[in-house]
Amino acid sequence: MTTDVLPPDAPAPMVDSPPRVLPTASEIEEAMALPLTTRFILDEAISGVQQAFLDAHGFILFGGVATPEEVALILREVDQVQDALIAEQKTIVNGIPLCIGEDGEGGPFIQRFAFTSLYSEKISSFVHDSRFLPIRGLIGERTRVGEGERDGVVFNRNMTVEGSAYTRLGWHTDGLRDLFMLHPTWPWLRPPGPMLNVGIHFDHIKAEDGGLRLIPGSHTQGFLSMLFRKPYFLSHGIDRNEIAVETEPGDLTVHDGRMWHRVERSPWTGRRSLRRTMYVPYLLDAYQPKSEDSGTPFYHRLSAPLNRFTRAG
Ligand SMILES: O=C(O)CCC(=O)C(=O)O
Ligand SMILES: [Fe+2]
Image 1 (cartoon, rainbow, N blue to C red):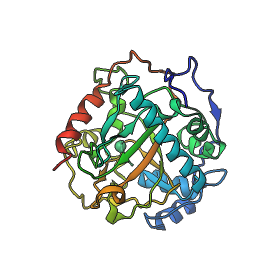
Image 2 (cartoon, rainbow, N blue to C red):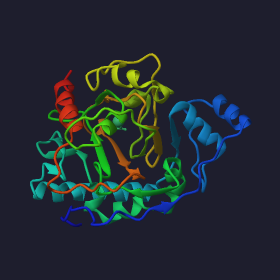
Image 3 (tube, rainbow, N blue to C red):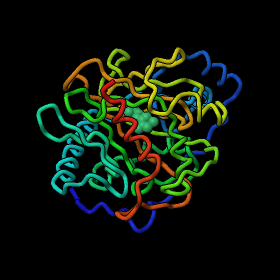
Image 4 (cartoon, helix red, strand yellow):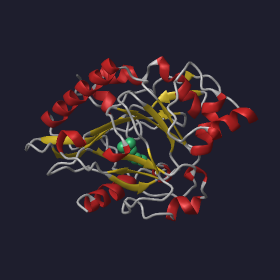
């Protein structure tokens, strides 16, 4: 466990992935006939059907990508990262505020970690694993892991207990975050291009447990709809077009950053309500490392208070 969180001086090397497949007409037809709850198997290359499914719906789920041992290992590492951050009394890492709540037993509980892999060599080596190459190929032919960029590897822990700071997350698109990327603290308006978010899931979550809700196909909406379809983070209501993404520990999801999604609060409380996810930035744009002196991006100054404001309601 290291306490040095400065990003590396040089970007992680760009790594080659298999090129994007162009689905055939019959693969598109096959993909469109599949249920939205399909659990795909991650192989050495993305199939035409998988690519067509992602293109059409804006998301895709691959079952059991991390083994039970890896899931357990990462969860142990995250506990140690929490211990290190709390010992250092860190509330912000490289400009990104940690979301810190309580664990229901009077102890602190970090509910959103940023730059997690900079604190854990094991998590770092996991996110570089070659099994993710086909996933990285969805983003671009040459990508790097943005361990010290944006928010780095983000680890989320939603839990419903007295004192929780993160039980749920209102409707939003992640693409808006990209609008604020050009300058760290001032918003610059420019429609974001395609951007994919890669998440690993650590818990058994059925629709009735809360969890990720998304509106399939909403990634192809126009820019205005992306800005104004719903009030960012304030709206938590059920959308008639939403679906629940049900997960098992070790599952991997990819969702288009332009699509509308939210996290529904668990109706359970305590340990039973715990939902953990890890989002890994695979990047291809210019290297933009963060440092201890990095300012807090506008997006975080918007989302954190709104989320806090609505967390009890
Ligand atoms: O918890 C999740 O799966 C998604 C969280 C999310 O949408 C976000 O942090 O932007
Ligand atoms: Fe999101």
